Amino acid sequence: MFARRILATSTLVFLLTGLGAFPASAHFLWITYEASSDPSKPATIHAFLSETSAPDLPEFKKYVRNARLTVRDRPVVLSEGEETWIASWSGAAPAVIDGECDLGVMTRGKENGPIRLFYTARAQTVPLKEDAEEKATGLRVALVKSDGGPAVARVWFNGKPAAKAEVKVLHNDGDVCELVTDDEGRVTVENLDQGNIALLVKWPDGQAGELDGKAFQETRHYATLTVFPATDATNPDATAKALATLPEPTNSFGAATLDGFLYVYGGHIDRTHYYHRGTTTNGFYRFNLKGGTAWETLPSPEGPGLQGVALVSDGRYLYRVGGMSAHNEKGMPQDLRSVADVLRFDPTTRTWTALTPMPEPRSTHDAVVADGFLYVVGGWTMPGGDSTAAEFVQTALRLKLDDPGNPWESLGEQPFRRRALAAASLEGSIYVIGGLNEDMEVERRVDRYDVATGVWSQVADLPGSKLEGFAPSAFAVQGRLYVVGRDGVMVRLSKDGSTWEAVGSLRTPRITHRLVPTGLNPAGLLVVGGTVNSRPCDSVELLPLPVEPSPATVAANPAD
Image 1 (tube, rainbow, N blue to C red):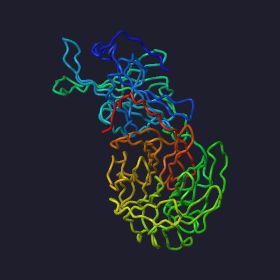
Image 2: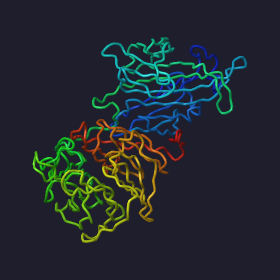
Image 3: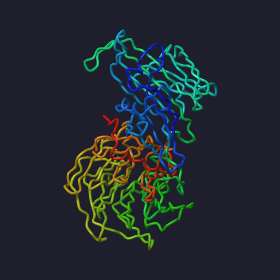
Image 4: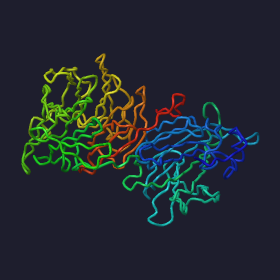
């Protein structure tokens, strides 16, 4: 896998000898991205300490134990591998992976005073914009766009251009040269964008201080950069594989998988916030995930097409729950109405059966099936007219599915009023993720309902920007909860519910999409349809599940 450098040493003190312009034998933090040759399998992110961008002796792993890696400010949780600390990454390759590691106060020998060492590392798959601003603190180096000319790197310290910074250029063939940045922190590095060169940058800040009771004369900052050219033309961050396209671009629809088929129903097929009878479809289709090449048209239920609708499966049937339809003609004032209808589809007979309607109409809600019950959470009721007349629903519901005539049971008032949210069932709990509240504010809050006790609680908020909570989608697979929001990063909730970690990304980020499992082996998640640039999207992407670390491994960087 790697070409390893062999050094006869086992102490970091030795590695710090001669910390002059560039230490002759010092180790630094590096990040590499190793794509899988099989697109159905996840890639691997490596973090390690070495002189070069190839891992060194395994004994140096201990110095990286507390390293923190992030993708778009979301933590990437590391586990201990044979030579490096590793993380599994599904879907599209991240454009940027950042890392940092504070090695604390070090002594350079009896004749030199103590210094603090702070390492940062970055791996890129595409250049940043030429005028990109660096938001991360500390010393950072990046490949930036160069308009067809030689590749350009840029260096920042605490978000400001680092003028006259010393840059060591390490070629894969062993050649080394040293350069200095200009007044804007730029330096030209031929072929840096080709992936066969790594950079090491040094920046002493000259500021004395104290850390954990130990005084130091200054902090020596060292930053590294590795480049792995992306092969995906849509989004180099993507770890996802393009699987299919929908029969027509659609958002705010229902999707579910059952017996090796992906089913999609309804949805909005025109530009955002534009509604009339022709903007919502009643189409019902399925795609064979075991080698299918075309969509099969299925019998649609009677009535108008719906959007803001849920479609779920219990392993035998499909259930269409609620939704909204536009009753106005094109060019006329909006007349938007939620429905309380609940229908069951039998794939064997290809027939729809009406179940007991919900106590009140609702749309832009979500639904899940767990232990023989259909659960419905969130949403609002649109009684007609435009959205100003809509009211947020207050209660969660459930319906026992063993008899079509069963009544609905209220679970009492929810501790929230949100719509455009996501729900998922995991190990006896219903998770409700994100959404838009009554004040039209996006929330990243995640609520959890314990089915056995009827008690609501909260887990860690969804990571990312505030808008990340608007119209995400979620599903639980193999005992873990996954969410994909608007920026296309797939995150996974820790088993104790305290943190989220980034584990994959899409080719095409979107909102109002659906995340559903393939139900196949190897397991994976499908990201279906959605909204891109205020227009419906037709892409279906496959995200392989990230590899779980073995029980013996130790998390290197638990999130804050």
